View 1 (cartoon, rainbow, N blue to C red):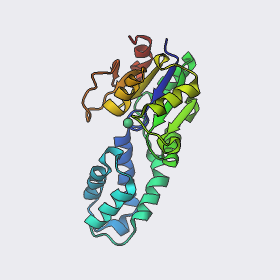
View 2: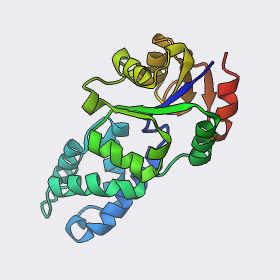
View 3: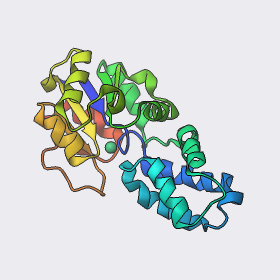
View 4: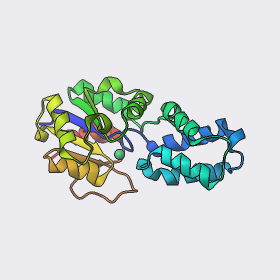
Length: 221
Ligand SMILES: [Mg+2]
């Protein structure tokens, strides 16, 4: 019987592509006098490329961006600080996230998040999504000193929740870092479909929308 449901954050709970697109468009507009040597569309598309789906931290992204466009009117630190403090206002959840978390919580499941990333930034993202109240545990790799796909971060979350691996399910968008890693530990795993990644054969189920999640969890093999 499933007792605990654990989620990845970026690309699973957070619609990161939409959030990032909205943030970077707004950032350009707010910094326009200093950035005017860069066409807006180039600024946006190059930022998104350099970000590499979140796998490159923004210190490097902004350094490359400003040097590629020979922009000297402001520093990468200014833009990085803006990203760190303003991204929270652009966090977009995937559809039906809140209603689904509400259902899962009131059904009695224990809920948790395991995310790779920086403590302050990931906490702000969770605040931006307004979902903190649903989760018993939130493990962020920077603070834990261990990151997915290492089994330690999953087993630590299970231990905190007091559940066995077989009593838990992990939901994530990454085929190996989320789905395969959770399966290797004996957890059930659901792939939140993301067409940028290949379909993981190990997944117990696949979802495109959160509204189906409570039913899927009840019928896991
Ligand atoms: Mg992810």
